[in-house]
Every structure is written in structure tokens, then in C-alpha cells.
Image 1 (cartoon, rainbow, N blue to C red):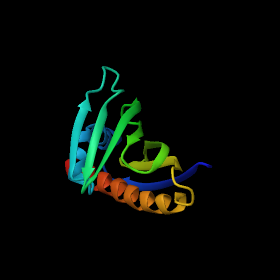
Image 2: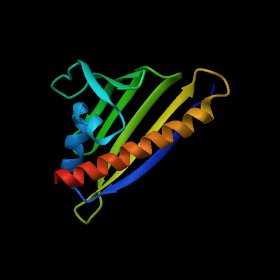
Image 3: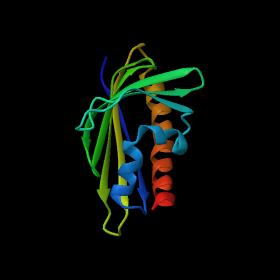
Image 4: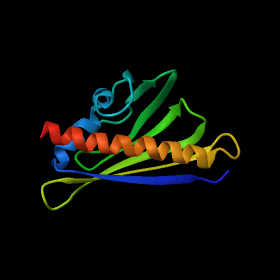
Length: 144
């Protein structure tokens, strides 16, 4: 099966450091996304990598691992389990916008486990991710 991908964006009036502080703290995610709960299964190492977190929404528990982290610029994670996709990887890139704010670019790619379901998952994941990006932007503005 071929890989599918999508990208969403948002802008926050908050500085990249403020946006990253929320993004980097997995336990804040339920406060700015529709995710109901976060449980940290393994804390990150000194470099911020390797954290395993479990996000619960309804009966779905999505387990993810942080695989790349550049303070105030980039956070990437892979899905370990929870939905019927393979090789899911998301990267959230933060770029100063020149006006003191931040451009948020959230990209993801994956392969569907079930043939024919990829476009459905891409649409649903894109919508959810847009909500996450917009929630992050707004929460950072309230923090700043």
C-alpha cells in the first residue's frame, strides 16, 4: 500500500517558545485538543526523545513516541498503536512569522492497514489535526 500524507497549518500571535512549551508538554494536550486524557508511559530522556504517551478519546487509546525534538522549532512523533494505520509519523514545525508570532505547520504520513480505507483515514486525521493546530495556536496566545 502506498503512503498517504496531509498537512495543516495555523498561526499564533504567540512566540515560538510559548507555542513549543505547550506542544512539548504532552500533559497539556487535553486542554487544547479534543483529547480527553494523557498518560505518560515513559518519560523522555535528557534530549527530550523517547517519551511514550497514551492519549484517550472515548474508547480509543492512541500510543505515540516522540522521535524528534528541536526546542522552539520541531516536534515529531510516531504512532505505536491505537488506530488502523501503519507507519504514522507526524512533524510539527514552528516558524517565526516576522510579527512576533508563529506559523504552525503540522504534517503527517501513514499507510492504511485495511485496503481502501486510506482516504477515509486521511480525511478524518486531517480534520482532527486541524483542530489540534488551531487549539495549540489559541492556547499559546492565552499563555503569552
